[in-house]
Image (cartoon, rainbow over all chains, first blue to last red; front, side, top):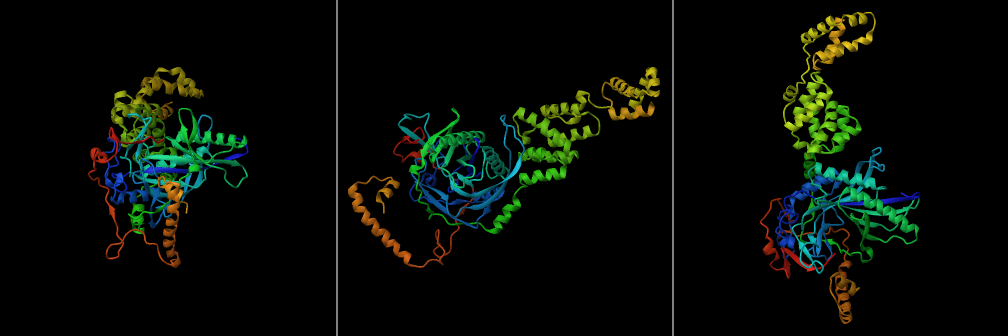
Length: 489
Length: 93
């Protein structure tokens, strides 16, 4: 960013809650059906149809709120947000306004600036104030392509209308695009972790918007802000913010100024463009939705949800560091996905060697999973089998490089460690009598070297080890070889 | 009372003559409702949502179980214009 300027960013995230049915009717929320099939009088906005709240929305909303450090409010109120758009059949969206479902969140995220290659510098904790997460219904989908006369007509599919959303709104606490980037990833993982949302941006069940403005360092007020939309991935969002920072600083410095407007990220041209100006800003005329009761959430209900919540990623990361002696970086990487974290913990416990478990999973297993396009739960190599492999390694039956080779084969074939080790002939000889026999032979056949060694040339020890290893075709356990050689020489 | 603004928000087109007619009418309506402001309601909880005939608050919530939807054909049957399974509307962007 140009010297002397700073950026102010606030984030809004819409997350689809992972229910079977819509928020106010029993139509399925599933994806990929023929247009307008999952519709009924409620989500079509037909006269006289009445909304009834889905209890699962309350449960998942509470889980999401708690995972983001928000307080679930005892009473919240649904309100009508009035505007006309073809994808909104009732002419209003049922949302929440002055009494949202949850509020007053403080979330600690880990964030780092990146170098020009996108590599993270040092991750540091940062507190983000989350103003609220309210519940609302999604609109339908506008189709502008692939149908007749799209220059004259638009087309509407209401399958998505009425899908439950949690809208998560932060204070303008971000001061860089990477902070916003790390925040969205944090939220995405938190929602997936507690099962509140699939939070998949590609499928559109997590959508984010960034409110961006810049100001001279030292200024206390805010300059005009721009709302960025069409951010279809976290990376696009980060790029769009960077672009916008430069554009706005330039516009201020040239005297042209920045308009308060909505801009879309154009991923083909790597720039933002105007969608609509705030001059015709909507007047939503919110008022309480008379067709719905206030939503009352008891403290007993919240206590029950809390008791059902899994250990959250940050807590798990800290525990991994304490309990298993892992570094911050390793522990953080293991808790990037819940399945991976569970895989690690099973391996660590079953193998009795948490550090080697972490090394093998983070370097070897993740590479194999990525190559195969699989998640930890889909791994053909089970945590239990990996633990057996690590035990075999720790017992000195195979060496580290062999273990890595065995791991790949176990991953590809799904076989156990023992089976692969036998197949590859990696089994180390730890049987002392077998090694003693080899050592005796080597000593007998190398009289000159033995005399020299005993005369003080200790460097020759390595020669004997080499000979024994060669004679055993590399299978002798080096530890045992060392011990026996020392005693016999 | 800006009748033009209210009409715009409601997507209604009104003529200057109609503005002249509606402005005093709407003023009267608002003035009538404003009588409620004479009451001191500072200690009264706002009532939101409905009550049962017995005066108790209702608790309408449903399980997350799919019902039979209308399906495409029925959903579109009352649309002024439907094409290829979609509602067809004037161009928006």
